[in-house]
Length: 261
Image 1 (cartoon, rainbow, N blue to C red):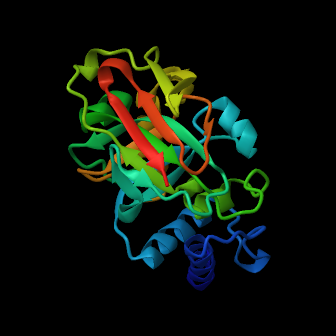
Image 2 (cartoon, rainbow, N blue to C red):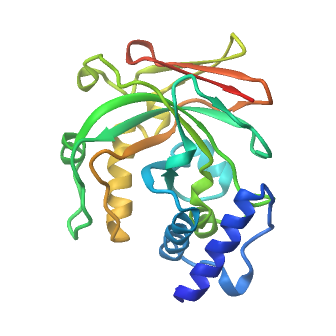
């Protein structure tokens, strides 16, 4: 993709994001036509933000999520530093249009997984992981109808990234836990609202972690030590509103909460 066009598309999306506006789509002359184009715009938008990338998110890791977004597979997006908060921190809902919360397994890397020609295997990826965390994502999109724009434009729009709440690293022996069968419970305003399971995340959060290492590798992007990767929602997203209190309980792995203000 022409670098100037990618820059213009990134500027448009970033201005739309910070002004809490929406657009129907990226103008046709600037529109990404491939996943590679989308990642190029995404990187330019991250640079526009002035914020470091402190990690990554995966969108559409469930079959239901892929059908909802009308995409044929997962999408990777960046976690920008000022959009990442610790357990219990309040989140400003503002003009968020999606208005849902998601409970997610998140991994922090202990060493780099640089881009290379050879695909990464699951065991190799998990050996690079340091810690496991419970997490909540509050996604959003800069499109009026994010279900019709397609994968390249969704990737350009940072895979619907918005706010992210990271719980403490678990003290459980998580490597001995079958994450695919691990149950997650979510409460909204003190009322049990959703149950989910790790297999909702590409069959297993560890498989999602391997997927993103290889997705980014193919686009000459690496994962770096210290970065967080949140692997996609393990529950059906919870509808939220101003004032909502969200609690995601991962059992022995831990609990994470946030309040929308």
